[in-house]
Each structure stands twice: as structure tokens, then as C-alpha cells.
Image (cartoon, rainbow, N blue to C red; front, side, top):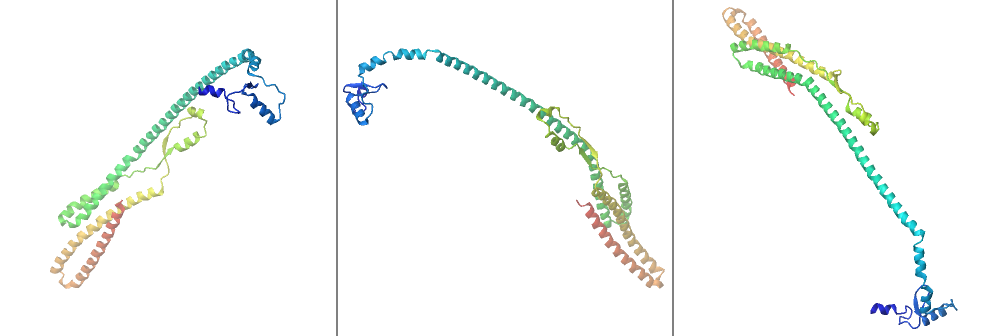
Length: 313
């Protein structure tokens, strides 16, 4: 009921219509309200204001005219245009889907190609690593063995000072022989190697290659080759040779110290029996031998200290 009253209410005076009049825009007002508005505005004087019946009769045939307009060729063209737009949309979507499949296939093939190249490089580097091991490992093991024997001989040589003369003579010859044999063992002449080509150089060249040409890129054959040995390596070999020379000198010094004890004993016995008259000469000789012993001991100590510095890591 409330909505029905709103439809019968004048929007100007907010009362139920009194002598309602309909404008061409289809809005309805009270006649008196319209006249007051026209009088207040000072415009549209003399314009007819139809009543509801007259306005209805004027617009009665308008729906037929509108239907005729809404069914002419203009609207048919719109229908055809909608169909054409939908067809174009479907075609474009199919093109996009096709492009997606092309992109996926392209990058899958590119990834497969790059994966193959990566596996080749990794495999080639592993092979080069094996060559490096074959080149160096046997020599390293051999040098470690020589060093172990060297340290063992140093320990044995040092311990000789605590042996009795008989044991000393029994062992010193064996140690000397072992030192000579160890010295005569040939040392390796291994030159440092160079890996060619370097992967960084190859990949730097590849970075200038078009993506589509990666598959055709030539895979290099990786090798190792000898290069000139640095002076530090030569110095190391020289130090090892010097060490064996010093080891031989130290053995000779120990022999001299050993026989020094026997010389003193022998001189004491001889001088007490046969050379009582030359005691001053003997005393001088004994003093000189004692000084020689002191010098030899000091020299041996310096030599041993130097040897330990050489072999220490």
C-alpha cells in the first residue's frame, strides 16, 4: 500500500495528485503545481499541459514504432558483429595456446641441450682430474716413502751415541749402506701441468653465441700438458740433495767421535808404558784431541738441528 501511495504522490507538493498532468518526459505532477512552477520560472507560458488521457493517446502507438526500430538491420549487424568478435577471440586464444606450446617445446629442447653440454664438461673435468691423479699420486707416495726412511735413519743415527762400541760398529755399517742406497734412489722430474683449454675461456666464448647456436657449439677436447717448472720446485729438489749430503757428513762426524774414545784409551795405555819421558807431548796431544772433540760435538749438534729444520713440515 505504501508503494502505491508513492506512485500517486506529487513530487512537488508531496500530496495525492489533484488533476494530474503528464509531461512529454512521462513525469506526472499536479496541474496547480506545474502552473506555479511555470509562473515562478517565467518560461514556457502558453505550452499545453495534457491530462493523463490525452498524453496516453499521444504515446499509444510509440511501442510499435520502437519495436520496428529494434528489429531493423542495425540490430542484425550487431548480432553478426558479436559472432565475429567471439570467433576472433576464439582464434586468438588458440594462437596464444599454440605459442605457449612452442615456448615450452623450445625451452625444453634448450634445457636438454644445455644439460648435455653441462654433463660433457663435468665428465671431461673428471677425466682430467683422473689424469692429474695418475701424474702426481705415484710420485707423492714415493717421496713420502723416502721421507719416512730418511726420518727413520735420522733416528737410528742419533741413537748410535748410546750404543756400546761393538753395537755401534755392527749398526753403523748398515746405516751407511742404507743412506747410500736412499741417496741413489732417483728423484722424479715431474713438471707442473697446464689444463687446456680452461672452461672459463670456453664459456666466455659461448656467452657471445646466439642461444639458437648453442647446440652447434663445438665441445673442446680437454687435456693436460707440462709447463716449465717454477724455481721453487728446483729449490726443493736442491734442498733434498743437500740434506743427504749433510746426513753423510753427520755419520762421518759420529764415527770420528766414536773412534776418538778409542784413540784416547790407546794413547793412555801406550804412554803409561813406553812414553813416560814424553808426557808433555802426550798431554799436549790429549788437549788438542779434547778440543777437537768439543768442536766435533758442537758441529754435529748444529748439523742435526739444521737437518730437523729441513725435514720439519
